[in-house]
Length: 382
Ligand code: NZQ
Ligand code: ZN
View (spheres, rainbow, N blue to C red):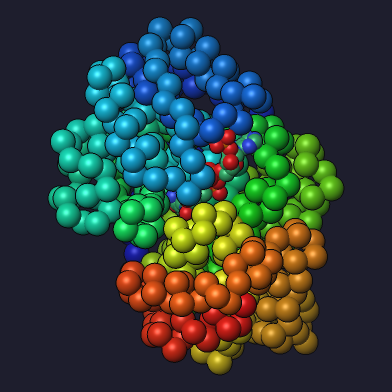
């Protein structure tokens, strides 16, 4: 067990119609809300209207910034900051998936500085000393952003997708109504399941030992597989959607980090290069990179692989059975890519990918990656 600090100030509202409480919750954060949304799904399914009427009935004025793309870019955050400053926003409300939530975190801090939010991510700017209160309404289960302090944005000009974390960026409150995820297309639903499993693995395979975290990790992976299989045929089943949503939150809200040293995150770094180069959805990149990573590092993580195999597949199972099961789950049950070629990324792109990995010094916190390892991973995922 490593030393750790447990801190999570986000208040979570979970369940059917929980957004009915948003107006009352928001009144403590002033009377002007900057609302951020993505490219329109939230308008079509009526969720935006519900949020706006909550605000209106609570006497809160709002302005909407629309158009945040999946794999969000810092320019949207800067533009939303400008809109928020002009409006005099006292709070930020994100309605969407991880991309909207991550942008909103940048905006919450950006409202109090004169520079681009990107300067936080490059560490050119000092850490924020203030951030506007952030409320989120989550519409896609995947990232855990609704209950953590992390944000990931990309800069297409420099070819960098970078994470940033600060305690001021925890949402004050997050609203999770599983019914809001009924309309998520099956492919993005599946990417979300792959993402949440990846968060568990990034923390789990890090070399330190924390038994509760490890049992908890294997349970989350097992349930994610069970409900991931089920949701593909029952996308509007409340309990299935609710379980996936809660699993995704638990995978990256700090619970699993107790007794660990922060996780490895090498696979995420590798995936961020794929996202910034090819605009591939985050979860689809992870379902390609993780099987390759597990095979490449198998000798270093054999004890942990065996534990997962035995917990999920029975007492005689070996680590390799876990890897094969996971890959098959992604490919056959979720129907998501496990090879670059299935995402239309040919071997002619390897040089480009290698260059981006090199430029961004992509490596894990514990499992180091040099150029030979980058190449080995690429060969395994070709
Ligand atoms: O843009 P709209 O039209 O809203 O459509 C979105 C988008 O196309 C759609 N969608 C969302 N909710 C919907 C819906 N469609 C129908 N019905 C709904 N209820 O889904 C698409 C994907 O949305 P996005 O927000 O991009 O997905 P996700 O939640 O997977 O977020 C991915 C981003 O989060 C980052 C990733 O790198 C990626 O940029 N991550 C953030 C983390 C964090 N903050 O802790 C950790 C993760 O590891 C991850 O890196
Ligand atoms: Zn992720």
